[in-house]
Structures are given as C-alpha cells and as structure tokens.
Amino acid sequence: MSRSKVTLAGVELKNPVIPASGTFGYGREYEKFYPLSRLGGISVKGTTETLRTGNLPPRIAETPSGMLNSVGLQNPGIDHFIAEELPYLKTKDIAVIANMAGRDIEGYRVIAEKLDSTDVDMIEVNISCPNVKAGGAAFGVSCEGAAAVTKAVRAATKKPVMVKLSPNVTNIADIARAVEAEGADAVSLINTLLGMRIDIRTRRPVLRNNVGGLSGPAVFPVAVRMVWQVANAVKIPVCGMGGISTWQDAVEMMMAGATAVQVGAAIFNDPYAPVKIAEGIERYCEDNGIADISEIVGSVEPW
Ligand SMILES: Cc1cc2nc3c(=O)[nH]c(=O)nc-3n(C[C@H](O)[C@H](O)[C@H](O)COP(=O)(O)O)c2cc1C
Image 1 (cartoon, rainbow, N blue to C red):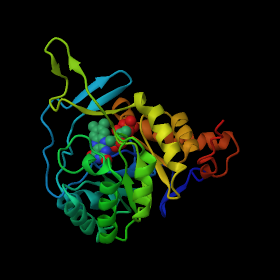
Image 2 (cartoon, helix red, strand yellow):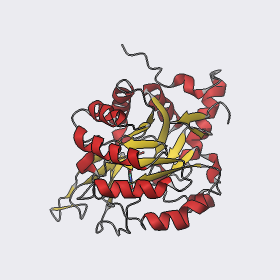
Image 3 (cartoon, rainbow, N blue to C red):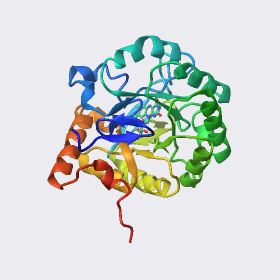
Image 4 (cartoon, protein in one colour):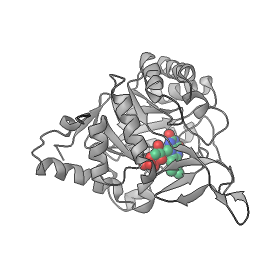
C-alpha cells in the first residue's frame, strides 16, 4: 500500500482512510472482521472529561440515503480512554486520533492536557456536535468560539491538533481561517447536518431529542463543497468526510482538497467499507499510473 501513503499534519498514515469518530467505537468490534492495521488511522468515539450516558433513545433513525443520530457523546470519559482503550489501540499499528469535546473552554483545556502526556498521535477537537446542550456546536458556529477553543487546546498540548468543523454555519471557510490563526495543525469536516423527522402517526419527532445530526450519502455533495471551500481558504491540511461510502467518493473528496478522508455512516451498512475504500484507492493509483495519491489532493479544475 505504498502509493496511498499520506501525511496528515505530520502524522504518517499508511493509507488515507480513517473510520470517523462515533461510528467505529475504539475498533474492538471491527478487529473481529479485519486487522485494524489495514486502515490509515482511527478517530475514536468522542471523549469528554467524565463518563456520559448520552441522550435518551430513540436516538438513531434511518433516512433516505442517510441516517439521523442524537447519541449525545455517550462515552466512558477521558481517564477510562487513556487507561483502557488507548493501550489496546497502540498495539494495532494504526494512527490513533483522539476525538474529544469539552463542556466549556476549561474542559477542552483539561482533556488536551491529559492527552498531551499520552502516546495518541493526534487530537481531533470536536467543536461541532449538534447533540449536546453545552459545548460542542456552541463553539463551532462562531469564529470567536472556534478560535477560543483552539487557542486553549493549542496552549495545552504539543500534539498535532485537528479541529473538527460544523457544517451548520453560514461560512465554514471563515471558521477554518479562525482556527488556523490560533494554531490548528489541520481541520476536519464535516460533522453532521442538523436535521429532524416526524412520525405522522404519533406526531412525535422520530428522535427523543427532537433533532439530530444527518450523515451518510445524502450529505456527500454538501461535504464536497465545504471541503473544497475550506481547502481554498487555509494552508493547513483538510481531512474530508461526510457521506463517503465508496473509493470513488474518497478520490472525489481528495480532488476537492482533502489530504485524508474519514468514513462514518457507511460502516453501519458494511463494516468492511473503510477497508474496501482503502484498497480501492490503492488500485486506482495502480490503474492510473499515480505514484503518490497526494498528487490528486486539490486537483479539481473548476470551470
Ligand atoms: C452515530 C454517530 C455518532 C457520532 N459521534 C461523533 C463523535 O463522538 N464525535 C465527532 O466528532 N463526530 C461524531 N459523529 C460524526 C461523524 O464522525 C461524521 O463527522 C459524520 O457522521 C459525517 O460523516 P458520514 O456521513 O461518513 O457519517 C458521529 C456520527 C454518527 C453517525
């Protein structure tokens, strides 16, 4: 898999494919299907300062070409992650990206400081979760909030910092510029788009949280557009995601400007999706005489 090796904010990935946060747990269930080392990296379930049980069910619903979720950052907390999950992942020959979210700026700082003294390869700062009341998207929807979180995390760690952006904004390129200015090493996008469905028999929203995040193939064109806009607005690398379910989608996302890609909802359909996408990218390189997949990053030629 040498043609599809990439470097994302200084971190070497043996291929550009990373299961997206919240769709792959800590990889344990998927190790039963294939060795995690076949993937470039893993973005783990979002970690918070303390254990969270998440929102009440129902919190997942299928939609045309996608899904709505309002899981609400259910996770065992940062100390558990560092003690129990990270040592396991570090035996798997895969780049470990610690996705995290704070309740407030101080929360982000505390988690970043704890992660700084571990051997995680990168920190992904979620400022875009639509499913929690405090933190999350509250910071990701303004340049000031996004900058403040990035500044606090940057001061707390020397690890590569990748800030995960919300699509629920008027101008995502402005937010990307704001986090770049505060020292982010990369940005990832998109998180889920805020959505809602109603059961017409009960007149109740299908999710107990009323609203939730839309992901899956339905959001792919939105994600491609945003990755393209952000890649043209900043110098730091972009990790692209949102609706990728085939290797062709991944190549398209890279042409829009993504150095690496994350795959989320597609995994619920097919646990092998990330591996198939990684193998497809390598085959695409071989078939098209591409020695290094990085050659195609941002290679779209706009009209
Ligand atoms: C069930 C579920 C849980 C998620 N949990 C997180 C999370 O903890 N942290 C985060 O940054 N993104 C989370 N996301 C967002 C995904 O990482 C990704 O940004 C989004 O789903 C778009 O990609 P996709 O269309 O390939 O799923 C979650 C998505 C889903 C579907």
